[in-house]
Amino acid sequence: MSERPRIVVFAYSEVGYRCTKALLESKANVRAIFTYEDDPNEEVWFSSVKSLALEYNIPYFTPEGVSDGASIELIRSLKPEILFSFYYRHLIPKEVLSIPQLGAFNMHGSLLPKYRGRACVNWAIINGEKETGATLHYMTEKPDKGDIVDQERVPIEYTDTALDVMLKVAEAAKGIITRTLPLIEKGIAPRRSQDPSLASYFGRRRPEDGIIKWEKDALQIYNLVRAVTHPYPGAFTFYKGRKIFVWKASVLNEDSKEEPGTVLSTAPFEVATGRGKIRIERCQEEGKEELDGAEWARANVKVNDTFCD
Image 1: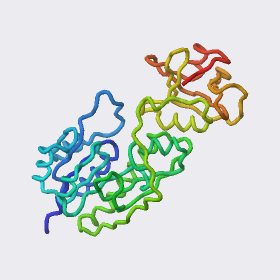
Image 2 (image 1 turned 60 degrees about the vertical axis):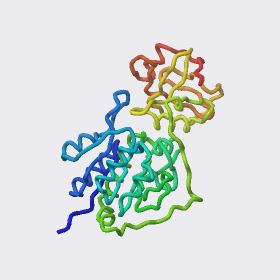
Image 3 (image 1 turned 45 degrees about the vertical axis):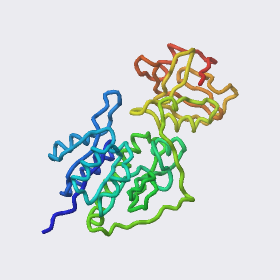
Image 4 (image 1 turned 90 degrees about the vertical axis):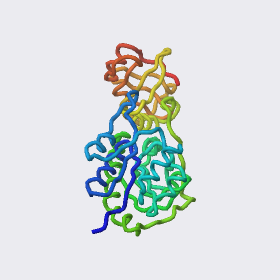
């Protein structure tokens, strides 16, 4: 029996872990894994790709990207016939993409061509989408624009946080890899071009992008809160110069005549928005412990006080 095609994997986060594990469980010929050391400043919620490499005794490397000459020569020396990128954080250069004769493939956390770019799950929730998914596509020099191999849809439920959706996307991604690997190894993977007229692009999100704009409607604020709640940096507002994180909220559709950002009650803790009201269920003053919203409000604010951005 001939040896299966040689594979080099670039992977991180939960999608990276589950997809790489699917390859290893299928006894694919994985010659090396490129990943990252865990960042002590990050709230790590996902499984470790490095630990997976150690478990399966696969050589692993943790450079900060692979665009330098030494990394490119290392990859070339591994003679990969297939490359996979599963939530690897750095762009893989053209010199590397041209090495594998059976193709280089990337797993993206949306239904391409929608939501190209970074933080695609967070953006989908912020925008009130009802579904997203995972897409395996051929890699090109331009990110997220290559032909599609396979896709799987996942629902975004009204109460889902970004973590909930990310775990669904990771499981969908694993399923895609499991069913497409035999086709990729044989060089007969399907490919469907993306329709550029349907494309949308969103950039990375920074912690400071979590600021609550109280003039927006309650649903928009609710979507922001659940899109960036734990393990992400959080939505926040300001009260008398203090930064207040909102970790959990719910929508009240009754309109208020008060200015957006006005405290309407403290128990329950309700705030006026541009349209409707928000009930704050969990919050945290920066540098202090996270509390039930009403508990924090009773001790810190009064009705008719205001929050600002």
